[in-house]
Amino acid sequence: MLGEEKKDYKWVSTLPENESLVTGLPDRVIVITGANTGIGAAVAKGALEAGAKAVYNIDLRAPLEDNEFAALQKAYPGKAHYLNGDVTKLDTIVAAFDKVIEAEGTLDGVVANAGITIRKGSLEYTPEEWDLIINVNLKGVVNTANVAIKNFLKLGKKGSIVVTASLVAHGTNKAAPSLPYQATKSAILGVVRGLGCEFACQGIRVNCVSPGYIRTALTTYPDTDPLWSTKLDIWGGMHRLAEPRELAGTYVYLLSDASSYTTGVDVRVQGAIDAW
Ligand code: NAP
Figure 1 (cartoon, protein in one colour):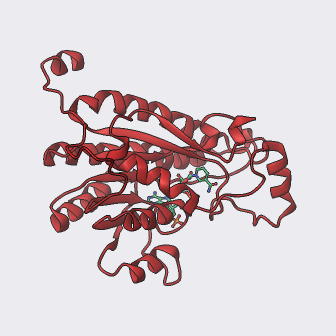
Figure 2 (tube, rainbow, N blue to C red):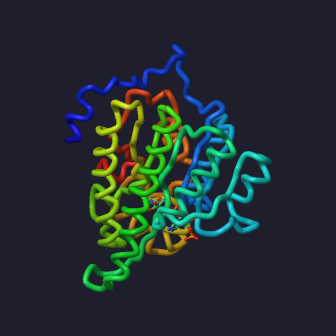
Figure 3 (cartoon, helix red, strand yellow):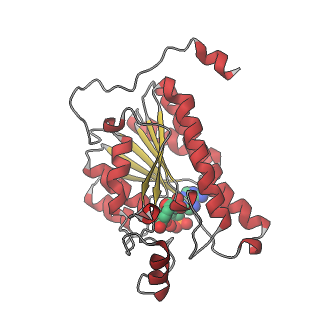
């Protein structure tokens, strides 16, 4: 039984050896899924600004010449790498992590960020659409986290995993509902709590971030669209879309030693939407 196995386990403390506060990611190797654009790309930039040695973006397609990750590759030559992978296909994720470890010899932090949505009425989803969203948003996170943990254990690293959940993990999106998206994002909170508890004794931390409305490809409408002002009226809060870079600090904090006593939790970055 799992409990029995862990009873005699020697606890690995996450307490940093350095007594001063380390808020950055000095020389860390960070893997992020779905970092071509949007939140993932902003987290990649934040990690490099915080001193990361290398950032690896596992995404479906190579970065387009003019996208955010391609810009990062130009700004940080030799530090921002793209690896092909599909979070729904475990073998591609295993292979991508193998390449990171082959190149860097180590792994410090992983962001399970890739996610998709389809918006329509709850009764209109086909079984295939349900499968697709569950496969990317839930099983994809589990695949990424499992491969990350196995590698941390193999390397003897006190690694940190951060998962991207959503405001809809906590409440229904009145203005643009998506039942499978809400179901998967809520389920992720359970995954993070479960893995956070199970692997605390091995010094591995697992947390998530729940963003509010962020200006990315996923928020389909431009914010000049009248729909956005309706949405923000419904939700209250700061009455604007956030820029992806406004999330980066939270991810960097959760990846860093500054959060050494934090695991199994969700940090909501939602511009007061959830405070109403
Ligand atoms: P985004 O710009 O569309 O980024 C998502 C990235 O994930 C894209 O590069 C996408 O590639 C990639 N991806 C999709 N399926 C994948 C797969 N199977 N394997 C690997 N990569 C895959 O959107 P975003 O808003 O930054 O989304 C990032 C995360 O934030 C998602 O988990 C999303 O649910 C979450 N989130 C976003 C908001 C928001 O307001 N934007 C709010 C709450 C939570 P393609 O473009 O090629 O499909």
